[in-house]
View 1 (cartoon, rainbow, N blue to C red):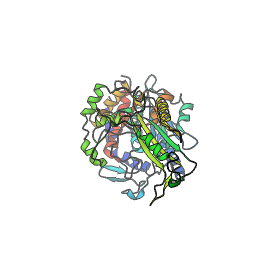
View 2: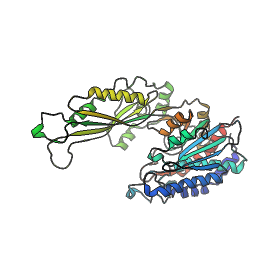
View 3: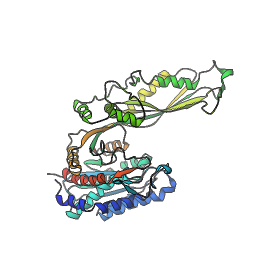
View 4: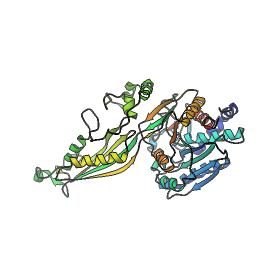
Length: 457
């Protein structure tokens, strides 16, 4: 159990912690823009210097793009090691005109700080640094061994992270990893995310004649790529909204009774969701609630489609080519490599003569499921109850976090703690991104408590 003196130290430094967070948020570390390259570097050095001040053995590791910051304080022989992952880069702030204040001039309003990166992810991972600082201000040493891996390319797909993990496996060895880049179930209801859906993303291209043809002169003679593509797409789903790819559901792990009960107990207002989305009906696989369909069942969606003429007025052509983007969300125990093969074979079976069909896999990630009876997961639940004053709920996330797959595959770390301090309405990637300062404070308390809950008894 965390000593009350440490919680008191955290409570007594709230104002200073916020001031330091504001300084961090002022750095426009947009990783995708070359014009911000020096700013991204400045953010890396800011984190590095902060770790040095905390007495961590710290280093900046160069990559082909933005650097990785690593720090460790491992002085407890026999104690478990926790690896904390975060990222110091942020999304582009555009459209700027939609912000209530400049995105890199943090503004505090109604108990929240508004700035790009406030919740995703500067504010959330910074809670761990302040928790460490508070513990070391009261006690001689941390109760467990701690390592930090903070990267600067998460918002552009982490292209440098895989080679870094592969070449630093011993350095990054740990018993569990903590990632705070998700959110609570809703404001005031803390959560531990124990499941993530996987992702599979394709581009499908259908090519017919060498060039666009006059539909009057050649209509009735050649296959129309747009029509062929539309027919193929229409056969990817059944009338009941299930996926029609043969074998698609074969490996799906059914929801357990406790999971369905937990999801049912959460107050998920479907009417409010429809109003928010601007639709009059929610669709999806029959026999499952909206929460279950949103987070724990596999899906297939058409993300975009193009081909032919779509400008003003009329242009009578038979298009030479058409294309579509198709994504699938996968659930345990589906493997993206297996589903990729099924998808390609199914489209091949749908491809008629007269056109060429090209299927390109753009990216993929396997789903993640962490058993809640793991010691580290239960330790996190107790820590969050200390920090937030309320027992967390266990939820699945409909999206994907590829870093989790990378850490599990490359480092063999099975205990993944997805502890979101933010709120679902924080607006990550959107104008007016915000982070509740109360949740920032609760996150610091929870992070500090986590170190003690993971410590040997």
